[in-house]
Image 1 (tube, rainbow, N blue to C red):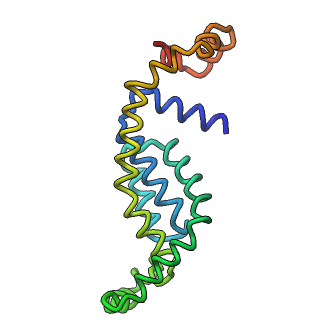
Image 2: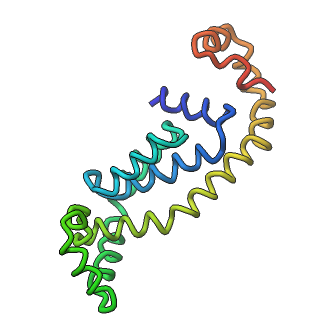
Image 3: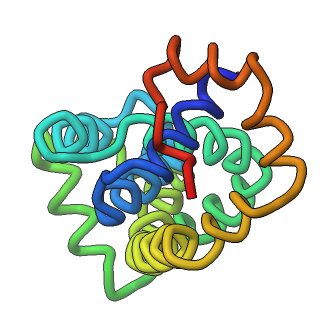
Length: 175
């Protein structure tokens, strides 16, 4: 857990693009909200491994979204059931069920369909909000945190010097 926190802090304080961090969080949310062994999750993993996406943020979002998904399952079930029983969409569901690859996607399951739709609806807001938070942290909050007395006290210890040498973070937190 501390290693993951250290990686997150390293990513926040590094020169990593805010978009890479935001995409990591948003794609991790999709993977965490939807059932793990789904066809669309292969697409998400392909995108994560192909493009410059921060893996620490991706794994954190996956873990947190997986826990949150248990609480949101009734919402996912409701959304999926409404979509699957909508009269206007019935021809689409019948056509998809006839295609073997589409059948593998398991969109006939209410929670799979509902969780995917909810996560896709939340994708852009989560992406933009995360990017905004990262940019504001880097421009406004980081300088204030470095000025805190407790941070200056910790930075002055021999432990911090040893930690910088071991972790390779020298200069990352300096003001």
